[in-house]
Length: 111
Length: 116
Image 1 (spheres, rainbow over the protein chains, first blue to last red):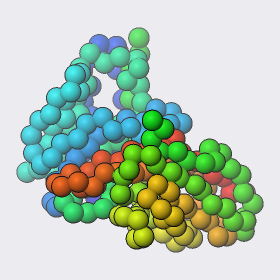
Image 2: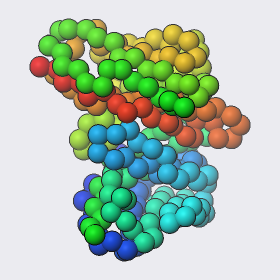
Image 3: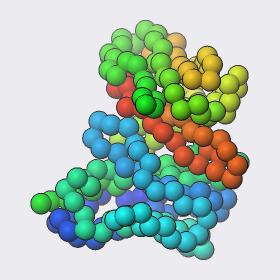
């Protein structure tokens, strides 16, 4: 079993839709949770960072962490065609030097 | 501000050839990483360097060596390339401060390597 599980998609939505992207994990030591966006043939770029449980909002993006369920989510409001990319979740335990990544969910937002 | 710069961007090698992938960051980060990305496998850590002068194995280190040349530069070497090493390689760096130690990674644009 992988430490981090993520549905590969693709997830296709119309422009303006609310998008929900999710990851589950098995390692209860994870405390830092991140979402990265990766456009085709580019490196991942950090979107959101959350420590422990709770919500964090940044513009159209909201990250949620539920440590009791070992489940994290990224919500995108008013989705745009420019949001079409692969979204990777990543996690880290305190003091560790490395991130554990999900395999990524490909999102397609059609005009 | 260039961030993380990788060279080359593309490379084709024959089985058994060697090469070094170069990475440099200008953000004064202590930690640097090498990942490979394969379809359906996600990003997997090859090696990392928590600080200048130290390196450690990650999840898939076999067939690779690394050198942390100084604080800015972290190179990845393939001594005898194999077709299984065909992949996209990403270098990353991250800050190391307080409770956010190693929580963020800033990635380069990647090197697409094909071994035939």
